[in-house]
Length: 79
Image (tube, rainbow, N blue to C red):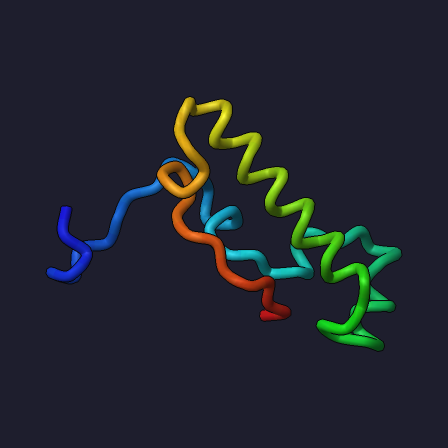
């Protein structure tokens, strides 16, 4: 596979583990704080850590390094 040729790498992880959308990793009771403070909320970091732990668990389950199983890591986003 050659990414330079426009080929999209295939990862074994589900789509929600390829990109951290904060809302997907928050408990309902945590959403209000993130709505009020956005990316400055400490709960944004908590959501990102949950996402990282889920990626790591998936990678261990399939027996691959995290980046091979799920792709590169980016910053958490709200959308």
